[in-house]
Image (cartoon, rainbow, N blue to C red; front, side, top):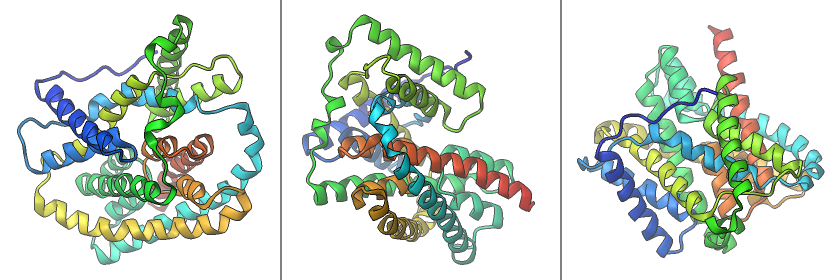
Length: 349
């Protein structure tokens, strides 16, 4: 399998990661939800906006660590997930409806109020991954930088506020998640082989199939399949998950490198309006779907929340939500947008 290699590293990469690690440690000591990723993101983002010379983009370093998180999230799938078929069927309708409504509402706001051109507004409004939408929007002739900034603002705001609000409302301690208590010594040699194979093979196959967010989704799907079949119960150790969260957080924060304050404010002020609009749509859908699914309102909202698949799934893991249900729903949403929205755009042209 052909796997992308890491880019050439400079002294700024370890410096950025050290800064991100420090931010994660501070948030961890404050017992904030999703501390390592949230702290790493905030530290890197503020350093980037202050134009500190030690900060550089770490997004190219994200794929291997996204694969680790994919394997981790896949390990939460157990045979009992099959009993949730009816819930997923109901959620499929809610996901489709909320995704379409989010796209329509976002497009109307960005086109008519923010004044974005048609292509930029379309791809910036889609509740999918930053990288995929920015790339496809740029190829279609849109403003790739604005698309990326809108998505970065959307995901960043959700990653900041959703864990904090959930922590206040549900009073959970994200430091005590079961998967976050395993040490390297708890994992047998055969299990290490399983974990490595799941990450490498899952990523390679997904990349060959040109799946969106292949480094995470491929290992996640393969890990979920293997754990559902009962072939292994292995999951990555706590320290590896922490490192992966720090890298993911630094990648989110470093999206703001070389961003001028004027452009950031122009984009952020629209993001500050757009995120409540999208959340309002998803909250309404969660209120309707919740009683039909038989899950708490908080869990159902996480299944519909228009954040990144990796980030929303990690929030579910940290907050002891039904991770398998949230991951499955987020995958459906991301695949729906990546394949449905882009195909629709091509047809409209």
